[in-house]
Amino acid sequence: MTSQDGGGPRLPQERRVVTEIPGPRSRELQERRTAAVPPGVGSVLPVYVADAGGGVVVDVDGNSLIDFGSGIAVTNVGNASPRVAARVKEQADRFTHTCFMVAPYESYVAVCENLNRITPGDHEKRSFLVNSGAEAVENAVKIARYATGRQAVVVFDHGYHGRTLLTMTLTAKSMPYKHGFGPYAPEVYRMPMAYPFRWPTGPGNCGPEAAAQAADMISKQIGAANVAAVVVEPIQGEGGFIDPAPGFLPAIAGFCRANGILLVADEVQTGFARTGDMFACEHEGIVPDIVATAKGIAGGLPLAAVTGRAEIMDRVHGGGLGGTYGGNPLACAAALAVLEEIEEGKLTERARRIGEVMLPRLRGLAGRYPAIGDVRGRGAMIAIELVRPGTKEPDAALTAEIARRCHARGLLVLTAGTYGNVLRFLPPLVIPEHLLNEGLDVLEAAFAA
Ligand SMILES: *Cc1c(COP(=O)(O)O)cnc(C)c1O
Image (cartoon, rainbow, N blue to C red; front, side, top):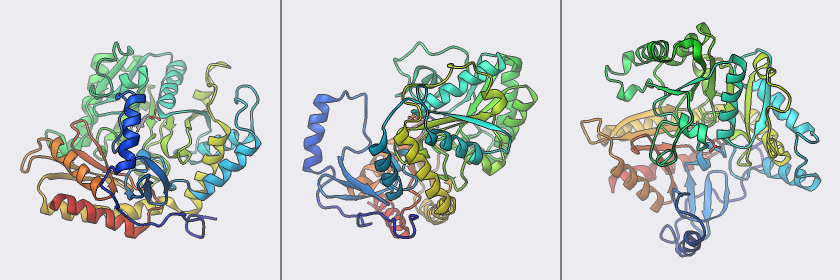
């Protein structure tokens, strides 16, 4: 059973707006939430979900929204994918937890075998499982420090790596991720990012120039011999879907190799077919030493992983890695189903097709609306950056307004970007093409309004 042949979603794949958004039931729930949940936990759109599947999210008022968010690149195989749901139910009836560190089970091992097989590079690898993207990145840094005996960690401007103490330190943006939460973890150094749209000398030279600047600054300010790891998202996510200019990642990888620095790819958002390759590193043939994965791995069940070269991963002493819930059996069952869906359903091809549909239409829109300064992304990880026409000055207010208009018309879109001026599109890879096109119609109507 694949998503193509009979395992399809239960819900009508349609946009349906029957109340204002949010509707009365959602507004009631929002009141309860405000009294029970602190405002520090935000929500993009306070419509309360009753059901979801394929390319739609249905709310408690009966509105059916086209999903251009996938719960932030998580439900790549579709929400409540039938195969995932069936495997999780089956596992829940047998056992829900033993703790892999107490008494292990096969599905954990099978997930790791799969990760070792599908992550970039054909060297011998090891994987272990944790609960969140932040935990994966944090463990990657621990292992890199252990294996190299070095302390410094290099990250990039506009990067996002999570919300724990170490990973918020690795994250670039102060508000809302870091503001007031210091002091931060030591030995973290930030380099410029090869951001083509905003590179001072233009996109043409951006890749090599940004890499040369990073190499120079690392050598001068930190000393390459002190650096344990360079941690980089092969396409930056929260920072605004910044696809580094060509040549940047290969040059950084070369610099790492030449200096005994481990290259850690944070593929938490880009992984699992999202960008049209299984992992975004594949686009320029980058082979990282360690890969952190999460979001798309298990269809929404909390799971994340660290995969790395066997000789690096095997260094750490027994008991040095792990966690109570890491590789929970329900999440492992889901991950095995997700990997089957991706491979049998050829979802990398679906992701490419999504990009082929979206990019030309968005470029057309940019031709008509000069507020769209840049259209970018790969596969089903696509964004537009909004500016004051004729400048590169970010327009966060317009971005929020367009998102609001999309929401009101039944299209769930997310914003992103260091300057809050990026609309990002992350449809489930199984979204029917008519919904993809209708979502783009809604976006056009939002600009026209
Ligand atoms: C979401 C994200 C994280 C953090 O993952 P959590 O599961 O939210 O902890 C880390 N890195 C990147 C690139 C992400 O997009």
